[in-house]
Length: 178
Image 1 (spheres, helix red, strand yellow):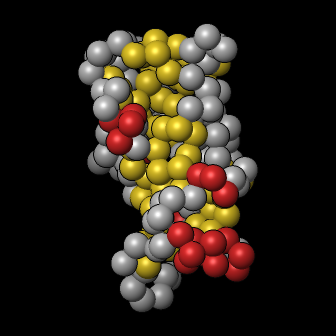
Image 2 (image 1 turned 120 degrees about the vertical axis):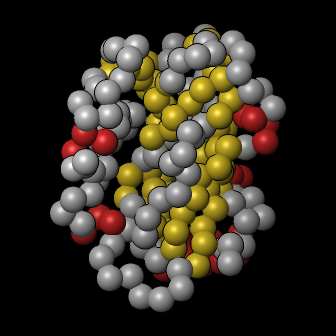
């Protein structure tokens, strides 16, 4: 079950959902619009290795915008910091973003109960497209959890993306054992 606008507001009032900054105009019928933060990042190496720490270079989106190029993975970040203490958050692209040929996540659209951070975006584009800091980039939807959560994400000792950040975070796959 997806939360409606009224339920999202109730959960914000209870403190089980936190969105900072919050703007009433961004609340949809059953979602909340999030915006592109001011930082992007790209991997330093063209060939990535899942067993190695692949480092990234951060840069700020200039006021005149930045042109995304096809065949390049950009890591972006939401302007909004969120906390979700009782629901499963999903981040999806907005239809207007998709109609520009922009994907905002490769596979990581689902958050966990207890996720408290900005969202790193895995951005790609089908053709060159100019993007801007602060533009609407996606929407959060919240699902009800069936059953009690044993360990919240922000309490897990092995959670790889717990550190609060305003910049995109690179893959931590190398921390897994395989």
